[in-house]
Image (cartoon, rainbow, N blue to C red):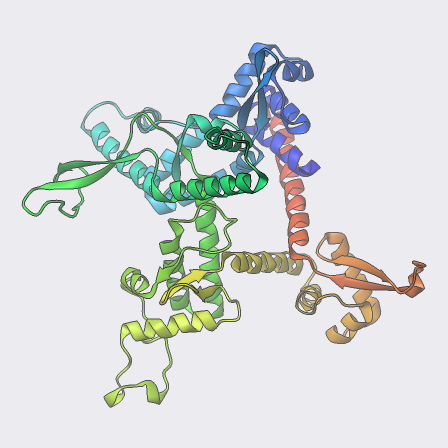
Length: 495
């Protein structure tokens, strides 16, 4: 982790939990995994205070622990969950999106869970009713039903996920425990190939488990009038029983930041096609992303699950105008110049999206009529567009032109860049230096001979998108840390 990232994590803990918890978190951020005794020595706090701070961090999913056998005793080591800690920067956007997707009840549920870390559905609803000042009675019962419905919907869409006791362990310890469980079944010590097979099998099982079931959600049979005010499909042809999904009352839940990030990314991918084609293309891509979203786990996946044309046609919004937004050749029109049917228009739209130069939508190689989203390519395009926007806003269009030229053509010298961009060499050298200092460009030296003298060396400029994104992310951490530090200072002046 970089210095700016560590500083931002420390300031987030200080803002949300106070200076005492900040001391414990700062030691864990700087020193790594440590037991309670060492943390107490570094922070000059009592062991009881350290345990209370660690309890707060674990309750909010910001710390994990690992148990290690040392001689005759078991020592517990604690570690900061950096990813979950940085996700707390997104809390305002999570609350806004919760209200947009699940209305006001969804925002209240997300706020309660973010305030307390993890809660059961019963405790969450009680906390919301208490903070709203609603006394027990008919109004409280109606609000309870409404909140229960919103909570169940958020769990079904995986915006809330169940918290199990194993989630407080480090990921490495969980993986090692599963590997040990498998290797104990073998009579002989496993070879390297067998160990690799075990790890691959466990990874596939873990992914299948995440995609198949939703922990904390159960189904039961209930009468047709179940209090939700919605019609449900009948389970029995002659009876009045239906399948009702409800949240288990003894399971704790937390906000799933990964699901919110996936949805935000999917919206950005669909918006690419609105700017490139038309709003109908955006609607089609958004529907494909929504259908494939259920099996998405995080933003590191390279491709989505396949979606068929028939499934896409059945799930398109009813107000989608497929016919009037396309231009047809006279040969494609039927008798009396009648336009093609809806499914034919959808096929043509999908073909246009597939032939697009962005290469985001592709046919699934193993299945006919199935399409997948190349999430890796889409993420690269989003990164490039974001970097272009930052460079354009900060430096201007000529700098963006140079950056795009290097991204398309690869490594170039100053004279080549000057010739392609039609700018004087002096201006090009100044702009290249500015972009290199900003972290967007990289300079590579290629000596002609063994002596690395400047006169006998090629200087090649290039754009490495991943490195530029990491550099700008570090700058972003620096800026966010400065803003939080300034807020602390201004608040202390007015305390």
